[in-house]
Image (cartoon, rainbow, N blue to C red; front, side, top):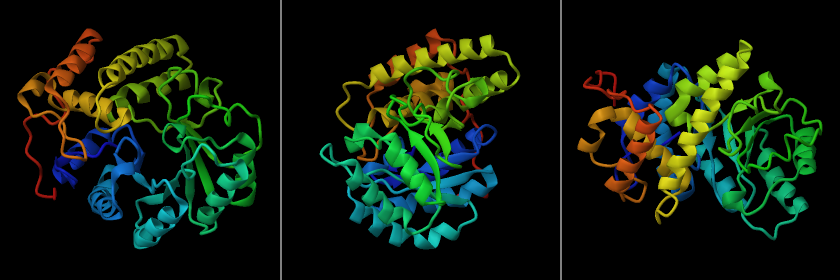
Length: 319
C-alpha cells in the first residue's frame, strides 16, 4: 500500500483512510509498509505511526494487514519485530513480511540461516523475494527447505520477475504464492488461468484494483480473451507510467509511479489544481511528471472525470 504524507515523514491519516475506502471493494489484504509504501526508508517509530493509522481503519475496510519489517540486516529485523510485538495480536494483523538480508555475496545457507532466526519466532510470516533491493535471490531449494521446516511460513511474494521458485515444481507445502512483478503482464500468472500463482500482491493494485479484480473475475468465468485484453491494457499503462519516473533521483520507482497514478485517480480532471504527491523525504514529485502520467491515462481512456476523493468531506469517524 502507498503511504500518503502531509509533510516529511508525517503520514496523512485522512488521505490514507480515503484511499483504503476506495480499495475496500476489491482488496482484502495489504502489506504495510512495503517498498511501495517507502518502508525501506522508515524508522521503527515511523512504521509504528503508520500502522496505528492503518490498523484503526483496516477492520472497517474489511482488510487484513501484513506488517512489513523491511530491513537490510537480520539484527535490525529482530529489533523492529520486538518493538511491534504488541501489534501482532490486533485482529486485522495477518502476520509479518521480511526479506533476506542484503548482500550479493551471501550464500544460500547464509540466507536460510538468517531467515531461520525470524521464522523461529513461530509468527505467521511471509517471505519477500526482492532482489532489486537485497541484491540476492532465495533459490527454489532454499524456499522449499524453509517451507518444510516452518509451518508458520505462510506466504511467498516474488517481485524478481524471474519466477524461478514458482516454476521450480518443488513442494512448498501450503505456502500461498503471490506475484509482485509488473513484467510479463497479469492474466497469465494466476492458477485459474494455468499459471503458478495463487494471487497477486502488487504495487499497481493501489491504482488499478477494480481492473485487476475484473480481470480475475473474467478468468474465473472462462472469458480468457477479455481478461487478456484488459491485462494488456494494464501492462501498457503501467510500463509507460514507470518510464515517467525512471530518472527521478528521489524515492523508488514502485512508490513514485503509483503515487502519480493514484493522484490522478483520486482527483480526476482536477488533478493539476492540486499539489503533486509527496514522498517520505518531503520532496514532491514534479508537476511535469504528473502531467505526463495524466497524458498516459488519458491516452488509454483510464483518466476519470471525477476522482475517488471527490467533493465529499471526511466523516466524523475519520482521525
